[in-house]
View (cartoon, helix red, strand yellow):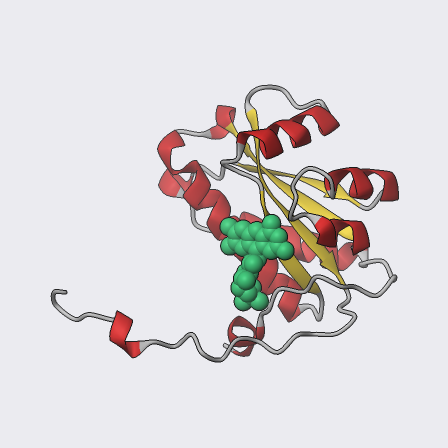
Length: 167
Ligand SMILES: Cc1cc2nc3c(=O)[nH]c(=O)nc-3n(C[C@H](O)[C@H](O)[C@H](O)COP(=O)(O)O)c2cc1C
């Protein structure tokens, strides 16, 4: 479980591109996430065009890492694929965590940029890619080879938060 514990948000990247086989592997990992009723409501926009990356970086006040990244993956929920629509954000969260963990496994660094449920951020992405109403932007994952890998947090194991057989 090394990668699970060494994963850390990486917000600064080397200029080099991310290889296509690594992008494909991350997307495979994302699409193997669990989802309610196995609805798999996800779609992805893979962005490596600098103009689009810079535009994406403006879709949220906290999306600055995208302007430094060689790659971003926009994670979308497609309403037309949802048989349990009330769970779409949980499905997409699991899918996004798989992207982050697979990036770590592949020697890459990544950070989750929150988009949904903030309406202005979702609209900004819909406008940028001219998305139809059924496509719901969930988050952006900025990816690249880490300029430096921050130390992972080591203070989050809190046994007092765990309750057995009742609270
Ligand atoms: C739902 C969600 C939204 C987040 N949004 C942003 C964001 O907009 N910009 C950013 O730089 N980091 C964002 N993060 C990353 C968190 O800041 C980061 O995961 C947290 O500080 C813990 O650090 P770690 O990922 O290094 O363990 C987000 C994380 C989650 C789970």
